Length: 189
Image (cartoon, rainbow, N blue to C red; front, side):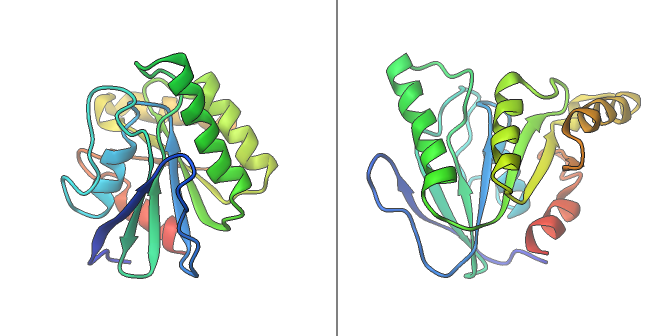
């Protein structure tokens, strides 16, 4: 499927109402600084639809983007290493968990983005276990494969696959758009 239009609809924090219309939602989740914003930008072929930063924890709200007028891409704040206060970290953690597990949204997919070079962090394992336990349709994206040598990519993906069992893994590069077609197919099928 080709993405023709992508627009920011709203960002929510705290008790703001989430979008609960009939359009399906695809949640993008991952630890801070893993490239969630860059992955979404690469999927929609735009550099700045989603604001990205080299500073971990820049996204501190849940951002909704309407794609082709019929599906939402939802950019969640990152978890894990964030340069903010413990109180704010806990607030963000609760917001992520609330949206994913208590909001009663039926997700078309949840795209869990990990760093291909780093592999699964403890936070990633915890998130994947929660998603699998709740029977979410998960797609695992191993981002930043462009930072690996070609000979390393297969080895890293194999190690990750052994850790995640039957979950689908897509080697990805937001920079070169490697894996873009595969991820779009997973999202829209």
